[in-house]
Image (tube, rainbow, N blue to C red; front, side, top):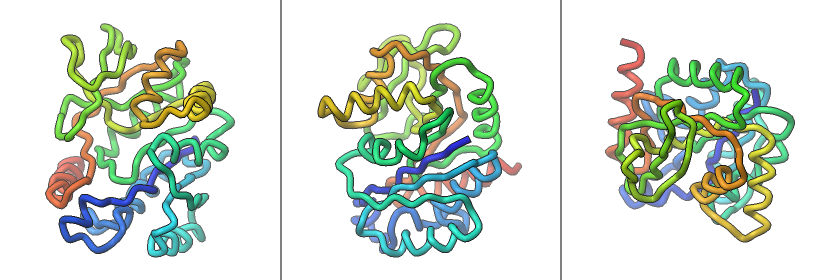
Length: 234
């Protein structure tokens, strides 16, 4: 399995709240966010792990170069206007089968993730998207599904049949990269618009529910993330 990590954001909200280090290096339960993800991916049969960071993160780059000595890591340094553009910058590394992509600040239960990857590995769908009914996001992306959890739409506001929101973990195949290229060519931006285009292009996407997925956007989220990680080992 190929994996990708989007870590090219500025982490401006954490910076405004007094955090002095780049977001990928923020520690949760004694481990930097990016190292935690790399470890989880390695434990889930990572063939490669491609990571995009921005040009203003020399600390992160040095940290990854050290990890590169013992892990299958590719580092892409590029400033991008959105997560969708960051995904596009990683796309050459993700081609050639199935891949899983997430942002660096995503915290989830590792056992749930293992089952999620196993489900994706055997599915004939073009993608399996992580979703959660735990809503703790400033601008959630709601996900509507049918009774079999096939995704029918992505919405900025909750429709009647949308129990879940997007968890920011995307397991996709090469067809999704074709849609991504079209989005870039058409001047589109934002991951949610890319996801909508996947549906418009007729790709088969299924939702996979997680109990909780937490994005570490604020200092208070670090405590929530540490609690979630602690609970998974009980």
